[in-house]
Length: 222
Image 1 (tube, helix red, strand yellow):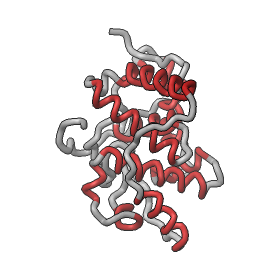
Image 2 (cartoon, helix red, strand yellow):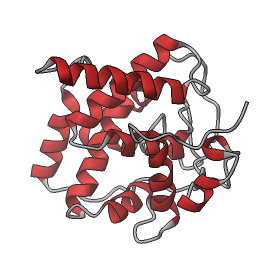
Image 3 (cartoon, helix red, strand yellow):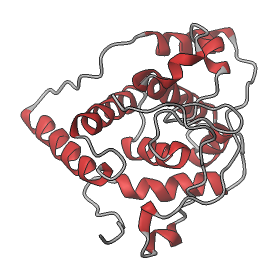
Image 4 (cartoon, one colour):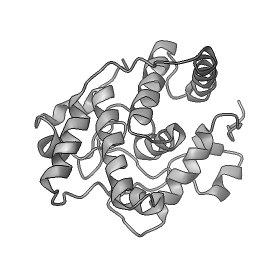
């Protein structure tokens, strides 16, 4: 598991629009001004609340299952490629492996593109497990604590647990995508509390390019 303690206010800027990806500094450039947004607490129908609570409750270990050798080989190639790209952020192999395996599992479980989730994590927390924003959002996917009361057991401290944070983040993002009828732009804005405004979705879409499998990201020299 990643080591460290809460690092105070996280920088959630990392606004990587498509044009900035061509810059020499690439995706590891210094973060820009932070967005202080976060998910907004909204009334949920009982059926939606129940469905989300059920999605959160199952804490199965993130062990990938494959129905063919080809699928397993594809996953291992993806893992190796993403591990290389994440090395500067998480130098220890075991930590990178556990993180990427969990992201892959939770993304697939929620029906999300893994590259989109990795892009969101890059923008939200810069891959810091204990990141805390100025509005109190926590962890890798900057989940607002109220969600643990609405669809969890009320223990906001668990949002610093890797799988719990990724589980909440993926389930919430899936909920917003469904609510926006598949419109990723609007769903990402809702995730950030900035629905209808472009900076945050543009940042996530830009960061997502760094995590597309089979494409080489813009990385700094040295």
